[in-house]
Length: 316
Image (cartoon, rainbow, N blue to C red; front, side):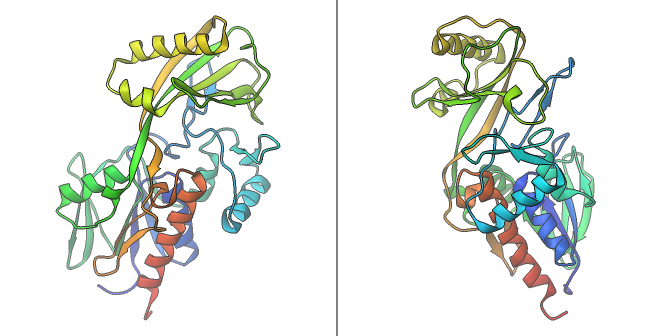
């Protein structure tokens, strides 16, 4: 294949968005595909019919490295992020997906498109979605799914990309509650070392959020794993009861729902910034490469983009 060409990026979460923006800045064309109805991945916000918003995935991000610190400053300057508290936590505005949207602004994104198979031919990579439609050719492919989904796609496609199988995730059940009264504690964000409740966040304390009394409750990994396949109604009832036991008082929700995150938090990371096979022009990135932080996904996506850009632009 000749140098240059369009890069297909599978996944519109933080890693995919960071890779897409980095490649675009390098002068390469990109096309992003995601199976969801919206972008952001685990940086997700749910809106109810009544208009209430819940960040039901990642609650915040925090910068440690220079690159991500500069990016966070750019998001704050653009009005798509703001500090949440004095401990350096930051959140998206008006919801957690906003920074990802900002990275993808102006780039082509195809949503509700599940890529079921990738195949490489003489002209480049072709993608086949779950409906049987094909896209391509592409000069390179960057897969930014959770590691088990990367492995599954490679197996289905008959393509070798060793590495993702060594990473592992903990699941998480999230409970969303809109209450008719204050929950009885002043803190914006509580964490607990023991199961079943791992985290409680008060949505209305975040900048740019509407007033009210909205909680996002994350179950602990061991509890979530033990109850992963149970019916949503049973999980919701159990988590409400656990929350009441934790708070020592009853809660009266006007809205309640649960969301299951099968791949919520990295438990075992690969230990490398990304995976890339220059012979195939195929790579993978995500927080599973470096660790359970949004910054890790950002750094991994950029690292993969740099590998692809160097490969495709060499010899132009």
